[in-house]
Amino acid sequence: MMSTPPAVNPVAPATLDTYDEVPYESHPFSQTHPSRLFVVGTLFGLRPVPVQRCRVLELGCASGGNLIPMADMFPESQFVGVDLSARQIEDGQKQVAELGLKNLTLRHASIADIDVGYGMFDYIICHGVFSWVPNHVQEKIYDIFDKNMNANGIAYVSYNTYPGWHMRGMIRDMMRYHSGRFNTPQLRTQQSRALLDFLAQSVKQEGPYSQLLKAELETLRHQADHYLYHEHLEENNEPLYFHQFMTRAAGHNLRYLGEARVGTMVTGNFGPDIEKTLKILATDQIQAEQYMDFLRNRMFRETLLVHNKVNPVWSVQPEALRTLHVASGARPTTPVTDLTNADNVQYKSNAGMQMATSRPLLKAVMQVLNEAFPGTVPFDVLRKTAREKIGGDANDPKLVAEDTNVVAIGLLNCYMSSDLIELHGMPITISRKVDAKPTALKWARMQAARGVSVTNRRHEVLRLNDLDRHLLPLLDGQKTKDQIIEGLAQVSLSGQLNVQKDNITLSDPKDINAALSSVIDQALQKVADQALMTH
Image: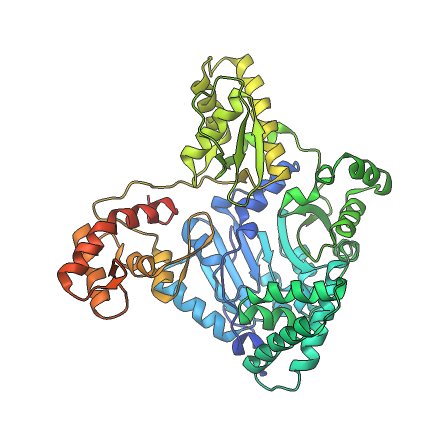
């Protein structure tokens, strides 16, 4: 039986929280999704709770940007978010009420106040919090994982790590020294950027120091002010070595499960010589992870923890994939005209990762995944459909066993070494058909009306152009295509949407309608292809 949090909010400190002054943009983080955590647990021999009926707690939830899409997608699961920023919680609660979500509670409270009254959870998420709070709050986070997590639960926690943060810490110290004389977050942020500019331009000699300054400046140029302020200018930002993190976790009856991004755990990704040496140096997984951090100069981790009575098995068995769902956006670099020949075909992901195979079955697997993307395909359906594409009895027991092994090993190799293959703990069903009265996801419509980014069914952030931003709120299932065009035309006539033809802004209503009519089908199909439509 599911318990509920206490009815009364704990009293927050009287001082203004820095996240009230500078709200952190609240986005989904796909790597924290219970579906992804379920996958890691399943691969390593655990039996995690299915995400369709689970309890999830997020520590430091901001305004619920990570939890709201989850709660909308899984109405039979329960979600609780806690944050010390009253301003962000209030904003999130308004969104929850607007969406009519009954399975999500956002609470203005301190992490330090969480107790057994909050109940037990199957998944606990702590993203972007641990390194930025004092030591006693860090210990409380471990304690929550221990006391508020079910026996087969999984906790996600991200944090800054050494050795990589030794270099970034120098930059932070410089920015804090310079910006400390200014008394508003806006000025401190502006002055921090100005300092980095000055240093990068003034340090003339080429060398590691100059390269570090220029690399950090380039990184921060692409980051929002709220990120720079909270990442570099907050009072607390205490990185630690992975082995130190795990020693403290063990003191709270917790054990290492793995990383949210499993590929970082594979020693073979460094090459055979380094893998051989790592096996000599490291006597267990914790030591192996620490040595890999040394090799990578790692500065950030996303670690999964379980109770110490749980025993993960890190040698993944192909059979584990049979309960999972598979997706891939990788495309062949050249057209594939015949799946059954022995020609080598190369596939490339959006991020540039590549793999090649000459096996007909694996080429057929990639074709099935291509046709379904951005949706998922259940493993057994994927295996069967791929076999049917190249011929053979897809139900023959001997062939089923052989194909299962080939497909599972092929998928695992890609999953462990690149982003070519995704594994999910639940199906992601995509509607590509545009209905006569199209309906976009309710939360996406709400987000589009508020800003320039939305969350799709894959728990990804999508940036919107002007047309998409005004189109999505109109897709409420009540309007025909002509009515949608008329709605966009009204937005254009009000000056909020610039409709052009041949680089000339249109002002005549007939011209605007004609221009919108010529692009509406493509725009609606784009919404469907981006996994933003309801079923």
